[in-house]
Image 1 (spheres, rainbow, N blue to C red):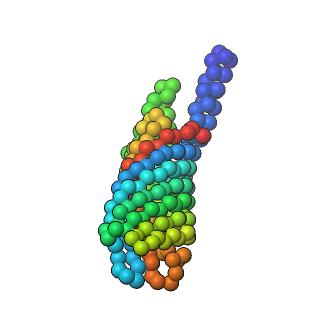
Image 2: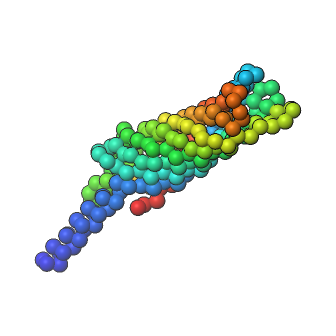
Length: 203
C-alpha cells in the first residue's frame, strides 16, 4: 500500500510539474510570403510587389486561462521591383512584445488525464515592434542606402498541434522613415502576408 501511495504521489507531482512548465513555450520558425512596398520621396511615390522571408524566435508565457504574453524576435528581408526601374532590398531585425489569445483549445490525454499545454490549438496574436533596418534603393542613375530605426506591427493566426509543430499566417506592416537619406521626406512602407512554420522546444 505504501508503494502504491508513493507511486500515486509521484505521478501527481510529475503532473503538476509538467503543467507548470507548459505555461512557457519557446518557438523557432521560418516564414515566407509576398510583400508590397510603397516608396515616397520629394519626386513622388513608387510601389511594387515582391517576396518577404525570414526567421523568428518567440517566447510565450500563459498568464491567465487562454491569454499569453511574450516576445518575438524577427530577422526579415524583403526584395521588391518598384515600378519605374527601381529595385529595393531591405534587411531588418525587429523585437516585438506580443499578446496571444487561444480561441480553440486542444487537451490530449496523458496517463488517463487531460494534459494541459496552454498554447495547443488555434490562437490569434498581435505584436508591436521596434527595430533596425538596412535599406538599399537602386535606380538607373545610382543608389541610396539607409540604416536606421523602424517600427512595425503584425496580426496573425496560428494553429499549434499537440506535437511541437505549428503553422500560421501573418499580416505585417513595417514603416521606415529613411532619415539617413537626408531631409527630403523619404519614407518606405512594407505590407506583407506570410505563411509561417514553427517548431516548439519544451521548456
